[in-house]
Image 1 (cartoon, rainbow, N blue to C red):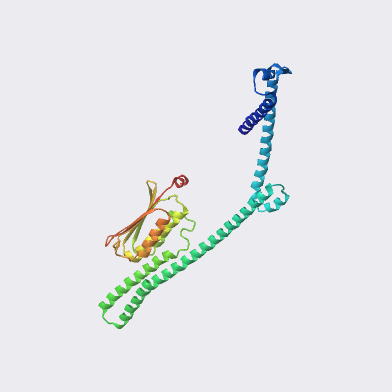
Image 2: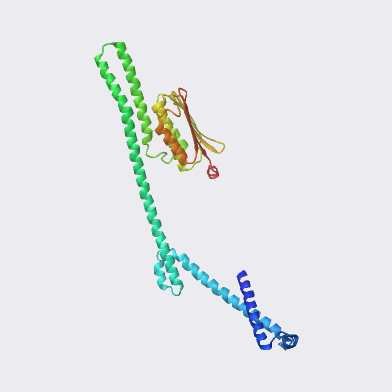
Length: 341
């Protein structure tokens, strides 16, 4: 409507200017004597000036209306064609199109087809790249586990076998009892090593379970196999699947380090929501280590740090020799997650 009114006034000014220019050329300079007839002479009860104004207004209105309708029709037609450009069969429709719009639409269709092909290629390359990354990580993880099994469990079992061989050659009962005790401790430590390493072999972290359910199942499983007490407090917290998966892996890594290195008698696991934060804390009373100097569990600590950074949360690892270790991760709970909860 605004465009129609604007066109009307523009055309009215053009027509009025054109009419006055013609009168000026025919009659001469606008003086009272020469131009008085525009008001004195009448037709159908109206002065000639009024007839000129009405005629100019009518012509301007109809021209503006015609221009608006024509532009609107072209706009609608162009809109229909543009909407169809994304259609894969649009190239066939162009054969039925005529006029100057055909070339522009053909160029637009070619551009969109090129972009579509590029996006499909990029999507395929992304899938292939992701598959390659997954396979590479799986291979690296298997190599790491094989190396650790060889460096830890196999050596401990070898030591146990050597002690057992020595027992068969000795007759001293007290000495035999001492060595048997050593063998028992080595075998127990080897079992803990194996259970810790098996935590890394779970193919899917949660298997369609919530984080709370997955942690409870993990703790119940460990309590049946380890020689120390595991206390836990777990709350249901609404988090994204990525956050849940990373937190579960962090818990696995921390418990694995405890099993393999800490020699703890008590472990406490907390998963709670406080002050719009989801807090995961694993604490043990084990041997601990020096944060700067001891690299015993450097692989595990590195994995915890990397997973924490990937989900944009804060973490801290505090360890005191002969006192124990605390691993704590805090994840902000977004408003959307609170609403879903």
